[in-house]
Length: 420
Image (cartoon, rainbow, N blue to C red; front, side, top):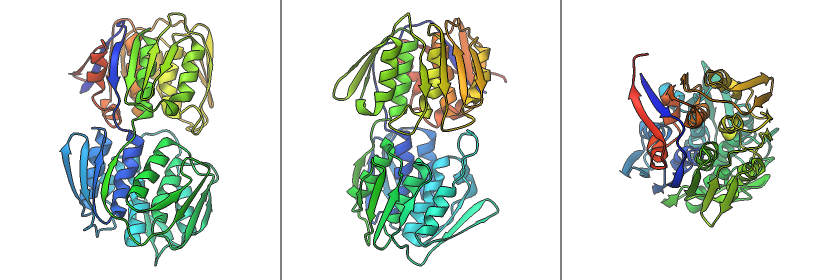
């Protein structure tokens, strides 16, 4: 069984460059189905989710070729299959974006319920209601969503909450809908904007991405072209927190500082020095971190995907901190693994109380999901002794060369094989 071994106590220092955004990449790849020409997508992260989605595209009839580790050429002009294989769907939650892409392109889609991290109930009702509003027939049979239409019609869609997945899926489907589609109470996350920018580069007519109202005027077809994915804000935040927890001095490069404002504000509140440039952020840690309160929210609020990493940092703060998780009810599944490292964390529904000044000690722990795995590595950087993190398959889904990048900053980290 593979583990990531971290021997804690090293102060991280230096510069590190961020990869392309996972959450944008996994939306843009299915969206490539809508394009009527060859698409070259640059700055893709070299992670399992990207590899799996490229295989899914090929299974539907697209031609995919990685010209290097981070550039994929996609020719989806020959896509004719409308049914996604169950194993492909279960490999990543982002497989549900094939619903909107195939429905818009072919007028039919059969996509199994998606896999991904177990963070509690994550229904796709908003997606299905939106497709129905656009004129599609939608049924569920044996855990497979069946969609069909005789041409989508533009409509006004109101989302009960600003779901990122539903916003992107409906935006992709609406590209070919006749007339104008309005998505109200839309998600504003950076990867929503990046997906819209990608589609617009190929000939779509989308305005308002990044605001609560997105307007899509349907077009007859899209072409091909080149597109570069934005830097990953969650990877950026993970390295910023890693710098803070080790009392380090790290400059994170190839970033968009505006995307990190909620985290930068919290790190400053805790006593860290955070400096920003055009495409870089420098974080200098503080041995006397202050406790604080963290509430997750939709963008531009504090991202739920950085909540576990932040919990690790709060273990080193002076006093008690309170976390309120407003997005996923099972985001705290990592708490029992944190306790193995000596953390003092108590969960009460959506709230967690983290008592700081913990002397974290190395132990064998297991990632319960992608971001929990990253958080355990961050905690291991500050723990005494060796921490072994298992279930690394979760981590590989979302972080490119995680160990290499941390090692370049001075971490004592390696991947090992060990009997379970």
